[in-house]
Length: 376
Ligand code: A3P
Image (cartoon, rainbow, N blue to C red; front, side, top):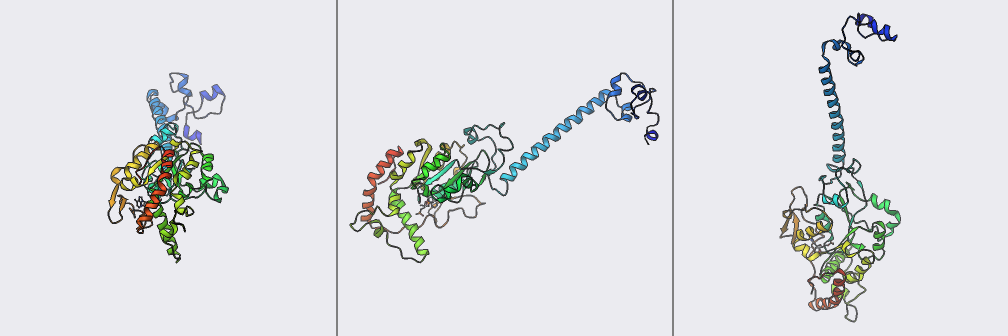
C-alpha cells in the first residue's frame, strides 16, 4: 500500500541505514543538511513549507498545548471551588486573600487544590454562652461574614456523653468549609459545665472563644421565661418567678439553676484556668441588642477577620423590637419567635433583692473579665 501511495519515496536512506523505513524521499530531492532529513515532519509538507515557517508552527503548537494544560487546570480549580461554595454547601465564595488566611499563615501560592476543598473541620471559634444572652443572634450575624461558616446546631459535645464519641465524630458534625474559613460552633451550655474548658483546651489550646453576657437579672428573667414556656408547651403548671427565685426564708434561692447561671464569675474562673484572657472575647449582650454592628466589628478584629459585615445590613424592626437583617434572599430576616419574648412583670422588691445579690458577684466577674459593665 505504501508503495502505491508513496511512489518514489523509497530508496537512498533505506540503502544507507539498512532500515526498513519506506517513506523517506528519494535522493532526487535536494536537502540543505542532514538535519532536514532527521526532522519529524509529514513528508508531503516537508517540500512545501520552509524550515523557518515550520519552526514557527511548532512554537505555535507548543504554546497552544501549554494554554490547553493551563485551561484544564483552571477549570478543575473552578470546579473544586464551585462544588464547595456555589450550591449545595452554601459557603460564601470570597476566596481572595483574607486576613483570616494571613492569621493562619496561608499565602495564595500555598493554597493548593486541597485547601480549596470544602470539608468538615474542627471549629476554630466557639461561642460558649451565656444562655439567653443573645447567643443565637450573635451566631446568626457572624454568618454574614464571608470568611466564616457557622454550625447552626448546638452540638453539646464537650458537656455530654457525646464527648466519648471522639473528635472525629465532632468533626463529622461540622459544616463543610474551606481552609481559609473560620468555623464557629455555639453551645451556651458549655459555659456552666465544669469539664468543658479542659476538654476544649485539649482539642485546641489556641482556639478563640466568645462569651456573650447580659445584665444578670434580665438574663435570669429571660431564662425563667424560656423554661416557663417549655412547661406550658408540655401542659405543666409553672411556678411564678418570685416563687422560684426566693427561698422559704425570702433569700435568693441559689439552688435555682437560672439564678446560678447569672453568677458569671463562678464559671468564668474555670475558663481562665485553661485559656488566657485574650483568647476570650466578652461581648456585651445588652449593647449587642441596641447596636449589633459595633459588637460585630470588634469580634471581626478579635478573630483577625477583615471588616466585611456591612453596617447597613441591619435594620430595626419595630414590631419585633430587635434588629433584623436586611437581606431580600432571606425568608425570615428576624430571629424566630423564641427569641425576643415578652417578659413577665416582676415584683420590684424582688428585682431590688436580685440587684443586691448580684452586685458583689458582678464585681468579681469584672475583675476576672478585666472590664466593667453598666449594670445596676
Ligand atoms: P428574650 O427572648 O428573653 O428577649 P439566646 O439566643 O442566647 O437564647 O438569647 C436570646 C435573647 O437574645 C433574647 O432573649 C433577646 O433578648 C436576645 N436578642 C439579641 N438580639 C436579638 C435579635 N436580633 N432578635 C431577637 N432576640 C435577640
